Image (spheres, rainbow, N blue to C red):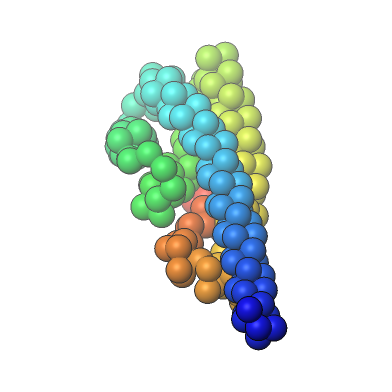
Length: 184
């Protein structure tokens, strides 16, 4: 074999090794994002389990807040029925549920007897704790998704990503920038 043939084989081998290394990094980043979503999913399930109890506690004191209670129950049902896995539509439902739950918790300001109820206080504390854990999990997930997306858009990773069908994952964004408006 000539030197040119060995040179071509060397270049091809280096390209294959580089492609394999890039492929493995993409897999690792995608799996890190999926792990982050699994952490979110645990907190979402925990929150979904608290919602019916919280709605019942509020219903006893604030029965004329039926529209809010119905909305929370419907959003919870939609969240529980959502297909498992990373899905932007599911994120929208969960974000809406979170906003309604904040409104539900703020009802205690209008109903002092609700604020005094030990069961409601306990459920509220559990929900706030769950929302805090959800926020941490969401930050981790979004960081992992950002890293994964950056690789998908960077050269030479973009070439390998397109060749093997890697697709971007959605961010789990929130609307926490605005204050919750409560009508009393």
